[in-house]
Length: 392
Image (cartoon, rainbow, N blue to C red; front, side, top):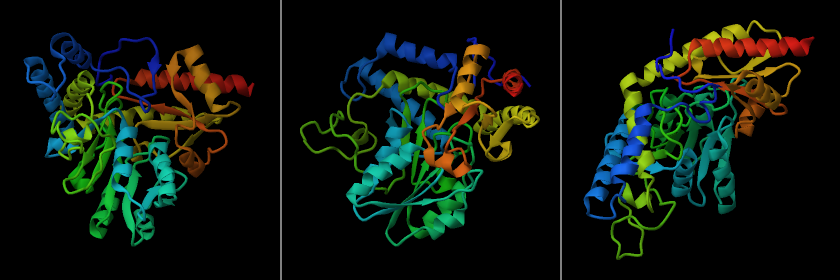
């Protein structure tokens, strides 16, 4: 079972794709380079050929990304610099004093911190508790709804355990109740089918630099037509320049200032590349890798794993090694074995409290389509060696 992406242009075994994917498709870098060297004007700001060419390529990138999520109107997809910005746009751009939000104990701080900040503005929240494997019961979400519930915000998959959430069930509940459904697609975009129509998602935030294999500094927010969103930023849009009021047209009114055109164009290339391979193909391949790793780790008495079985999560394995702190394991894997993973609390403290790793954190392995079975074997061998040494 070779990697479905054959390029391997680096020495370290990279297993930190949950933070950002690496490597990237060669064509992505070439597309960005071509933009910067040949035509990189300011899109929507001028009528000369370089500006028009840049605007045309950004349009094509928007359409390519929209196809991944089955978004029919690409103008409803707003480019951001990451998922965090997109989530802030959704949360702070919709909610107002007196609103109530339902979220979960498995959310990233990019959801939890904006909601905490908005408490001082009269916005309340209910955090629905997941179980020890990170699973969420859709009926618990429905029970948490109130007459003033304006939004339900749920991650597609936990960035800590990889646990997939019952998005279709929750989306259907929100649709029936007339409540906005915000999906955090940070760990699902590119390996899960996040069809905004099937999920009844009113808002979908996603990164460009993780599963979509795009450059860092890219992300986006889908906003369903009919959802009233206040712009997070006010400024130049290239439209209605005589007016001091921020335009409300999509997408320009919500992408104030000069956009990162080379990176967006690179993202467009990567999104089309992922679409060509197939999101489901990538998801299945990553599941196979995790199965291989966890089969090995489960045989080691000094390893404790967290979260569900591979078929019920994205390409993540979370574990602790007896006798070691999580950060120590991360450091040793990097310095001695040339393996990149992430240890600690992963910007999701409540998730660690939910699964029982609040005090010590854990080591996260997150695979991508460029990984191969030998990477899993190398990591398992390294963990076994570390565990046996400490046990002695």
